[in-house]
Image (cartoon, rainbow, N blue to C red; front, top):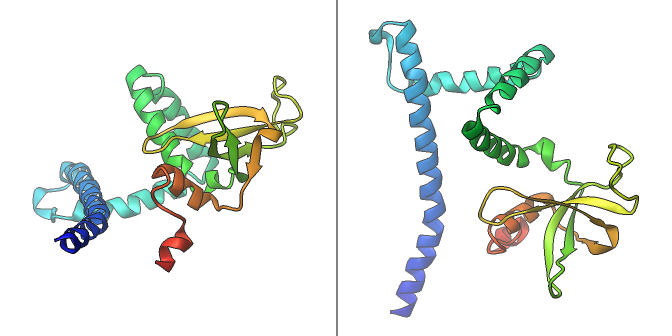
Length: 201
């Protein structure tokens, strides 16, 4: 009976991420279809509408929006609109949280993580994985930071956000770990190993 339950839970662990991924993709597709489909029906006759057209229209829309953001003029307009959005109290909390969390995993922001480090945790002898974000404060004008200090970002596990800590360089230890593997390790509280280990299993 034990081998049967072991095989069952092994299959369960493997299929749960797949189900949630498919569910999320289906939800995104359904939301896109509903929103863009209704917009299409507003400008064109209903007889022209074909189910799935909203998703098809969404792909080039996202691409062209990203292309427009490359323009300084459009980017400036978008930033002004964003400033108006974050003036609304409740909307500000939701929007900035999602925006910051999404940008955290972008290739642009990953390059800002200069080094994966272990940070000494004050109580006891524990250590926490973090990312050096600023190592040379000559580049940024922060007069309250000493020359021997650095900025380290400490992400939370299983939730959005994290803390940015200004600390002495002697309190961190650089480790040979990629940013991607470190993010996976932190996001899953150490349950998931690094990419190379997973591939070798």
